[in-house]
Length: 511
Image 1 (spheres, helix red, strand yellow):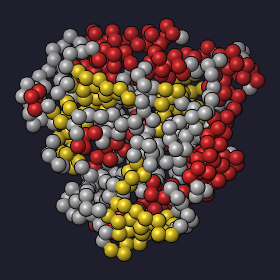
Image 2 (cartoon, helix red, strand yellow):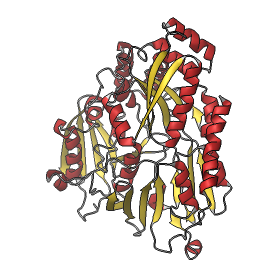
Image 3 (cartoon, rainbow, N blue to C red):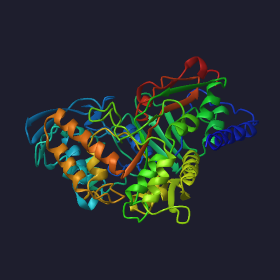
Image 4 (cartoon, helix red, strand yellow):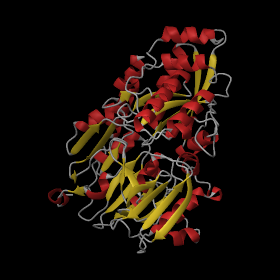
């Protein structure tokens, strides 16, 4: 397998070397936009519907929420401070910062109420509704004055503030049916300028007027070439390690790496006669050499995962032991499931057309083939692929969860009643044991007890494998040396663009 991995790595470098003879384009001069290359375009700019990584990251720039999470996954105030005034009532008082919408209107408690009531309305079709109703337990929203919001809950919930991370929308525009997905109006640090086409989004940083262009360039080699030629200024993630190493030695380029918390996994259709078999899923887990893939294809700070929560999360479990690479055991498990040389297990693996995703799928296809699983890869553009996954049209697929902060992700993804459209149990995992563990974890108002319950749940999920966690992606950014102040976040968000990113004044005169 090492030859397969190294061959894929060298193919990208040979392409880069062969394509790299073009002259470097002159970089734009002072006052020009800072250009950020994306691997995937955002699907929507309406925070009520954002579930993909690109949309969520861009929406964080355009909108402010009542609450954000810190690096340790603890809720912290953004627009409001809060107080638990009774076990089922939480009062949020809006501060002075971040309350001016892009259209000049002042954000009040009425906008908060309208935003959350819109999500709670079944007619809106927001994928966030189920979490806010079933998990957070919102029953009513009161607005005693323009600066105060009171949430009345159906039951006590010690984690409640952490559910209020949705960007706030203007109530008047909501009432008018405004298309926030195409023309966002928020009170965030960035203002919407234009979205001329799917691959080019223009925003303006409100504090200084600096413009940013988010350019979708799906092929990682092409993104690297554009950076080297001065056609983009920075790019983040979705790069194979050989291209990262190549950039680290290029004049005028800086590369930063940090550990991350976004988890890549394989999802299974548990109603399928092949992937619905636990022995088959366990065979897949033992057939994949995660450490070799990380070393040869991912590199950097990527690390193996045994749960969708990172071990450093307050509810994570650092003591989980996953499935070691053991092809012989994988073959025995397949034989126990009724598959063998004359009757191979056949699996269709869906993935996006992102080149790195396809390369990873190719390696997994090879490794599963070595133990007797015949894998057929189907790759699609992001919109088609993600649409199929949300609709349950898959046998096996590869994806990543980005920015997981609250353990309510377990109800959203694994609870038996959380099948689409009310949740993301797309593989139809139906386990009374998991349901009881989720209910017990949510019912406790003691954080230590709650954490222990979630750890028992994670151990059970690792045993049953509705998902196969693969690794926590390392974060990497490559940028022109005249771009200053960019910091990597563990979940890959773009928040560093808000306050610190700038073009070096000296370098700007040379651009």
